[in-house]
Image 1 (cartoon, rainbow, N blue to C red):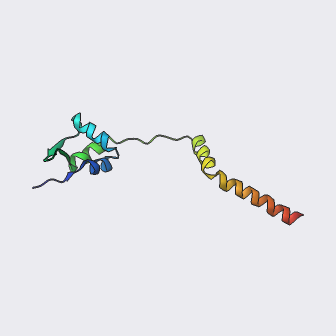
Image 2 (cartoon, one colour):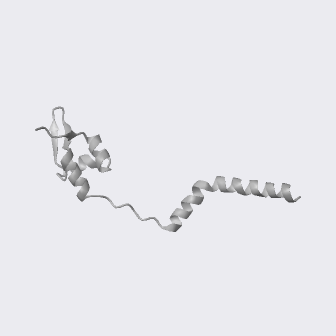
Length: 95
């Protein structure tokens, strides 16, 4: 029975890490790996899935203030454009 082997790139995509981090984990023996002819690393998919399950990264909590800052930072052009159009429209209507 053959096992499903993954390349370093596939392992990094599966784990959500960079390729350098995956190689470092293999060198530290935190991830079991096999060296194929030509010196290429291969990882067992089942081992990668079990590692991902036990070492899942928790996303950082972002405060409301940071969300608000990001909103105005990325949408300032649209907000300013809306205000200018609203002022010009009110000047046309009321004058």
